[in-house]
Image (tube, rainbow, N blue to C red):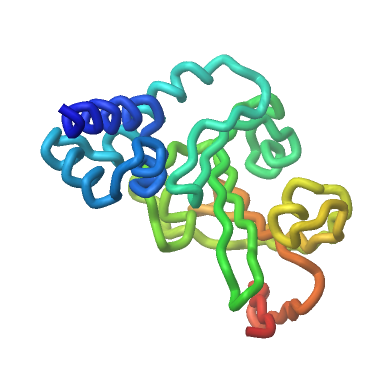
Length: 215
C-alpha cells in the first residue's frame, strides 16, 4: 500500500510540475531517485514529453499577454520567456510591440559564470541542448547558415538581478556583449552575453569577441 501511495504521489507531482528534476521529485515524495525513475518508466511517462506539452499549453495562455512572462525552465538550466523589448524588436526589424521569445542559461568559462540570452521572433525547438542556443532556432527553409554580422559591448551598472546571479552581489557593473545574427540578409536573433568585469579579457582577430579568463 505504501508503494502504491508513493507511486501515485510521484505521478501527481510530475503532472503538477514536469520541470522538476528527478532528485527534486524524490525529495518531495520522500523516496529515492532510482524509484522515481522506475515509477516513471512503468507508467510510460517521459519528463521531456510532459514538459513539451506543458510549454505548448503555456504558449497558448500567454499569447495575448503584454508583460514579461516566465514560461518554463529546463532542469534549472535552460529558461524560456516571452517578452516585449522594443529595442531588440527594432534591431530585428520587427514592430516595437511584437512579442519575442527569449531563451537563456548560465554557462561557465573556468570558474567564471556567463549569462547568455537569445532573443528572436522565430519559433524555437523545445528541447535541451548542450550546443549553442542558436541551435534551438527553427529557420526558414532554403536559407543560408546563421551568420554573425554586427557586435558591440556595453558596461551595464543597473541590472541587479543578473548581477546577483553572476557575482552574488547587486548593483555591480557587468559587461554586456551583443551579437546580431542573420540568415541571408535578414536579422533573425539577438544574442547577448552578460559577465563580470573583473578577470575578463576580450580579444578579437575576426570581429568576433573571444572571452578569456583565469581558470
